[in-house]
Image (cartoon, rainbow, N blue to C red; front, side):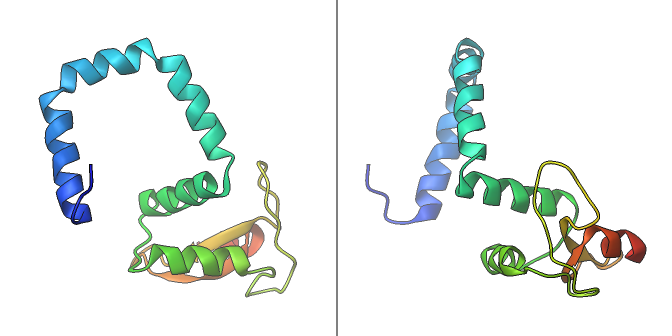
Amino acid sequence: MGWKDAETAKQYGKEYREKNKERLKEWREKNRDRIREVKKKYNQTDAGKKSHRITDWKHSGVECEDWESLYEFYISCKNCEDCGIELTEGKRTTSTTRCLDHDHETNKFRNVVCHSCNVKRK
């Protein structure tokens, strides 16, 4: 199906999901394990990590007009913009873990810092 624009496709999807709510619910229940495996694999890809990170920022209240640029800036920062320490990534949070610092009152992005500097600012 070739869509002329993203809005048309989005609207079609919304209407389809609404019309087939019960059928889709049954399919998800029947394929729960399959869905879990696909999500697990996707979350390990660069696109999955990016999507997850941006979703976390949105849920944290961070406001941004260009999430793509913000993510690219975040990923490209190798050192804390406050103390200069080399930033790290991983499943476990350490004092050098890369953080997106934002003002909790205005929700505006400030800079990319290490976890230690981010905790001091709150």
